[in-house]
Length: 294
Length: 324
Image 1 (spheres, chains in turn orange, cyan):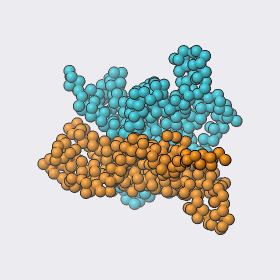
Image 2 (image 1 turned 180 degrees about the vertical axis):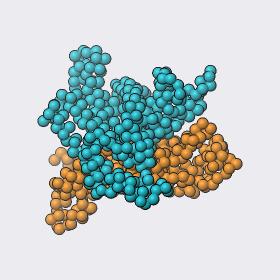
Image 3 (image 1 turned 120 degrees about the horizontal axis):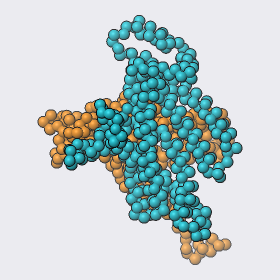
């Protein structure tokens, strides 16, 4: 046999697992690595911000207001004499936290929705997918604005609003693999063995849905950070004096003529964070896409 | 084709009714409901409150209120703004043209830049230009549009000045100079920054679409055939490649109409532009019930119509697509 013949002359085909191949592909792409590093830095800042920041984000110094960047204050000081750099660092927990929270919320509910839709099929699937269509047809951020205006401004409400409008895309993404997995022998076997519906969905369909959804989470985090900071910029998110990138930009608008440096830092932070997560998501998608060969 | 268009139009109607219902229910969830705007008025007694609620028909069951509202809406009575006490239709009529004016010029500029760059980037794939375009476009999509607007103001209104008169290079807000007679130059001057803000961010998106679509097309057999039969490269590019590559871009254009409105919200907020986007934010902050519902409904209608247009444009532009 041809196959054994190959082996016998000692040319063993190298078998590399899909996971390692994906990782190798990911590492080789410098942009993806850069995205991974940038987003990790922001995650560290989110978790340890209070300890990294050289000053307290709330410490005021009325002798040093609206100062230009210096060695003592890397990004200058704001109208209350607070250290802008410290505020940007500490703000990561709110800005990034809102983005991550919203996407995780939307992903969890969306996956449950999509799996249920694919699993139960028929009329339930039909109706729930039409609802998804309608939700997707709505301009998301506008409805988020309305929802937050209704519920009242605040961190939790922003997360809820963005989370809700993240649900439909995850529901649609999760439905197809759930539908495919449901028809597989192992799902049928589980059913024959008397597994309950929720067990089949949780143990057999969910693992099939997770990979594509996890990649999509990374891709969506950037958008969610942008949306959250936009809402804060409009005054609907985190309220002063809590430091948050969008809110900081809104407050510095007043000083555009006298202290334009106030605007630069928070904007750079948002752009970098979004860029980092976008690059990471792109890289992950490419790395895990089996159609893309090295 | 006509039958397909007609059927799609008919399908849009129940969707719109459903959305109107959704919007109505959503706004009824405001703590205090439509009366919320009066809730923090210390001069109103409970009796005043109840009387007003009765006069406005807000004590009727919700479904009755919805049907009344829908009926009035269809008759052209969109209610009154709580803040300005003017009819909603007048209020919107004042603002909508300004937004259309801003958005259409921005879109024209966006496409005028994005289409040639996208094509060039695709034709010279992996060239220095292509790498630069791809990188800038990707980065451009990560920049928050409102921050970009603020930076434009800083650079072109605060920092850079006219070397002779010392005046700012561009106005930092508004649609025209207040108190002066109409002047085309003044109008154009006020357009520079808001249009740049929308166009730069839009260009990032459309360049990517145009490039991807063009790359797809120039790999096709019929392009090779056209080259093989000796057709001039320029003619192949425009007559064969571009016309086909434009199809998906047209579709995306239609689908992106809501995104445009989203951009208008921020541009109008930053540049004090008297348009729909600002009206929307203002009415959301003031719980201006009738106005808010009208704007959301218009937004939803716009979205559905643009989806419809995208599908119809697709069917019309691509003869390979047949709809039964």
